[in-house]
Length: 334
Ligand SMILES: [Zn+2]
Figure 1 (spheres, rainbow, N blue to C red):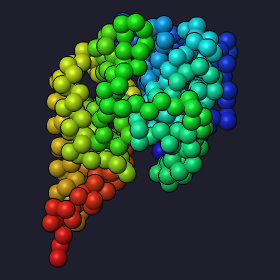
Figure 2 (spheres, rainbow, N blue to C red; figure 1 turned 45 degrees about the vertical axis):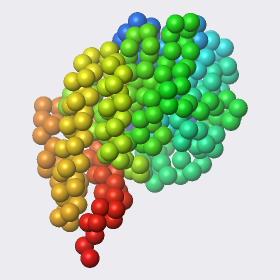
Figure 3 (cartoon, rainbow, N blue to C red; figure 1 turned 120 degrees about the vertical axis):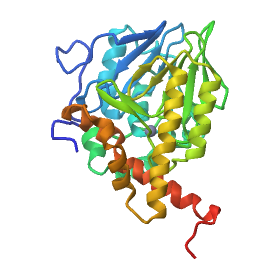
């Protein structure tokens, strides 16, 4: 688990101009024309959580990261020259706290920005009480030591995105929302019409630049294999030019990666299902089968993977999915 070097949102407040070497590089990384990857540095780590700024006369931010990432995010935007009235929109792929925890803070910092979210996530941004309570149960002490919480967004600032709806970034640039449940029921992909980049949140899985293979992300309480596979198919149908993962960065062979994601999801679900039917521990079965994925990944980087996308979280989500679908398929033991 994480060490004591993590600090919560109340711990440190950075402002642009601070000469603090924990701040991110000044202007992010350009991954496509008019698309900047911003390292939002969850836990102070490099390249674990990404936000993306889509440039245009109505600039839009995709993902805020967690509330603890807000200082790093605001420093990026300040150094890019975005004043308080310059950001037109903030869209979150889904409302897990490592993607949306900063929304309330960012909405406050940019009073003209519209906040875009999936229909099933909107009420939680307006009143985060239930979401934060359930996150507290899942994350335990990491909620405050690592992620932070989620401040409410005024309801009139929230725009619910339906499948296929477009966010205008400039006269000839739109982000199209793609309903993509599976990882979570409130998950959207965003497809940039100009660069062809598809922002996939967690729907394709997790692959950190510091090592390891693409792994699925199957957390409780929503994970659903069939929906997740359908969502990958919807992404492929759009023929994106690249996939931008929240964890982390651009993958340039989108159709190959979507194929790989389909395969890894099926393998993880298959191992989990066999363990479930045999009454074995799903986490142990997943570890035994997939631990070698991380051969060659340095110890310092394994911690990031374990916190972001640990076997136990995936096992818990797969367990819940299997337990939910089992009665419908007549697999009860009676
Ligand atoms: Zn997520």
